[in-house]
Image 1: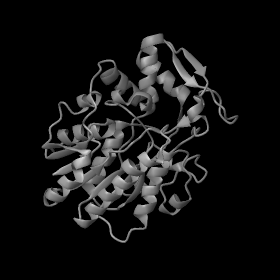
Image 2: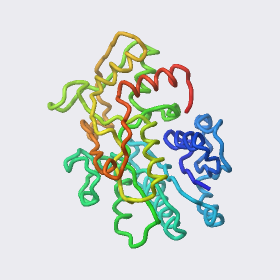
Image 3: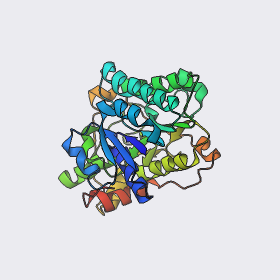
Image 4: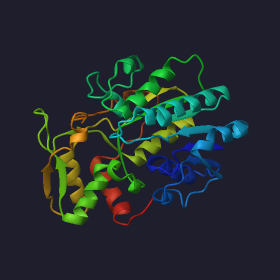
Amino acid sequence: MIVVTGAAGFIASCLVAELNNLGFTNLILVDDFSYPEKQKNISKKKYLMLVERNMFFEWFLANNNKIEFVFHLGARTDTTEKSTLIFDELNLNYSKKIFEICTQYQIPLIYASSAATYGNGEFGYDDNHQIINKLRPLNPYGESKNNFDKWLLVQNKFPPFWAGLKFFNVYGPNEYHKQRMASVIYHSFLQIKATGKIELFKSHNPEYSDGGQMRDFIYVKDLISICIFLFRQQKNSGIYNVGTGKAETFLELANATFGALQIEPNIEFIETPIDILDTYQYFTQANMNKLREIGYTKNFFSLHAGIDDYVTNYLKQNAYL
């Protein structure tokens, strides 16, 4: 059996779709399934069982001899949430328990870290284990992810294979339920449909023009491809960046979204919300050399190609992966 936590969420439900495509139906989907808006993400998926998040460890202990692999992608991902207690419970301590039982029963593990661990990027965006203790995330979400990475690296015992994946700015199908935390592409599509324009944040950093803020945007299909590569390889344990290695501006993103809809661009700049102003990242770009060096050779979707596929085949049709 293959366990997928956060299975009704954005990224994990896309992983389940790809595992189904590859012929895997022996899946145990773990999540808090009480949110109706997330049910469509898994309604057509093939799996063995749904396990509620708060019952998972009890179920795991009873079935550990049947589990072949764990994808731990469940987490609280709201970057505006300020309660460290929530992140300690759902991100840090829950992940520690999963790591410990995977170690105890020697079950391979892939888990989700985050590019939010890099903070302002003063130490760069290299997935080098040596800098993890130096990183200074900008919010409690990033701190919870970095705290788990730091805790893991000082353990004495490990699963037979493990990989922590620092997801950069992910976009793609199955994020309909994420509301404010959905990708800028999703919000841009909704804005165009409602008003004919896209609103982007003004820059409050003199080094960047309005719309010139840059992020490493990765299409969820590329992220899932990396997960499958590591799942199949099961060697070279470590923490890896999961981006494209190429930063793009929000202005380019907006133009690509208009292009996918075959509409002339109409862009307006608005003030950055006060609750994220002090923790706003102006630049992210993954160093992808480490993943390439262990044999990952696939090309990534360009921003234009990814947005075109997302808009044309999913958003315009309200379709799911």
